[in-house]
Length: 345
Image 1 (cartoon, helix red, strand yellow):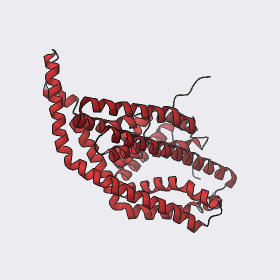
Image 2 (cartoon, rainbow, N blue to C red; image 1 turned 135 degrees about the horizontal axis):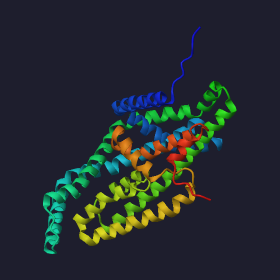
Image 3 (cartoon, rainbow, N blue to C red; image 1 turned 180 degrees about the vertical axis):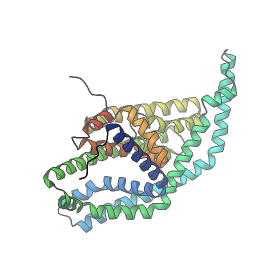
Image 4 (cartoon, rainbow, N blue to C red; image 1 turned 60 degrees about the vertical axis):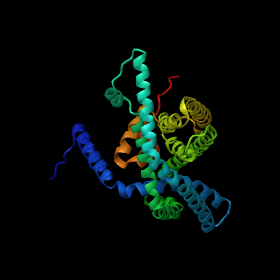
């Protein structure tokens, strides 16, 4: 007669943590393979609602898929043509900008010394190094530009994901023990993901376009590049817009002086206040957000695992995890912990 062995809560926690560590290590080792796939899944999630919309309008699936993929291909070509050259040019000019920025930093330290505030150059470089911030931006943009070499693989993966998207609910329905309840949770999960991604993509695109127009009017070099960076980092709420503005403001300071940097800063503040605090909350609604602490931790965590692209996808990935946890009664408490502060009634 066999006796069952129960696992203590402490042992269960240790086993779960060990499995989590092994999973994270495996994902980090396979990031060169996973990053194009995750980017493909991100594009497919954004492209799926227009595809289903065209199908509901009685347009044949083949034609609808061709139209959606055509838009994705055109967007990829425009992105490569506009951003690729800017990334290369900015990277080539980076040493010149860094030298100018170091000179301005030295002049600022000299002025502070005249005012009686003495800060050693070595201490200042450790605490605040603007040139390094521009270098980090160049490295991140270069890694993003490196993904352009995988454009064909990414687009092919997007096509296959969209081909499977329409038939996946039927497959899931056939394997679930309780199809009605399971399909309801799955549909709720998809609806929340699509809602979040659609609103976030639209507001991020609006932010990027407005940043591009403003910096172009002010006269900052590479406005397309900074608009693209604002679009990508707008997926990281609260701190993404701050990170996106730093290299552009430093470039404006080097290129146009204090006045140009001040006008650029005003533009960033107005755009992010209007889009992030007025437009986005009106359409996003409550319940889909995550706390500021979780945003920062997810940025560091996914960036460490997947590199710069992981920082771009950090909040969408965390949002997917939160929504999936919220779909189950057993794990909803974890989703609540990941969410924003609960207002007491």
